[in-house]
Image (tube, rainbow, N blue to C red; front, side):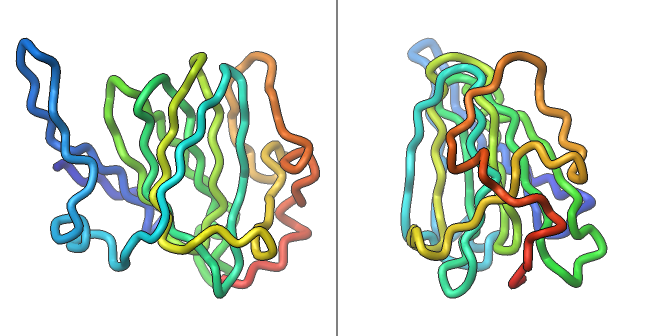
Length: 179
């Protein structure tokens, strides 16, 4: 696998090794021992979402004791994936990193605890996979507004489909970060 780190400490882009032949390809998407060398904790829950083109999900995070790190990947389609640093003492607090994930590039994006996460589906029927380091806890979920001008995220052009819950997300200035 190929590992790439970003200027925002803790974010990791992982490109798993793919073995292709005339039948198609084989790829190992997770192997505990190998991934533990770069990711310092276990994963306890896997989630899959299916999205129409233009769907924006996020920017979500969970507060302690249910704070989540995520390892995300697209199995079908394509997304613009976004992580926003919410760690109060981080020199990159409030900054974001975008990564394109697709079935073609097979890239994984690791987002540690202390980040809000979201994505926009860029193709119809996008199948998105999340590995989470903690179980989902609705009472501990928070939402940072996906289109907060302070974040400066350049979302792709075109109509957006955003859930009511995500429309109600708070701007960064109103987030009391526990991280």
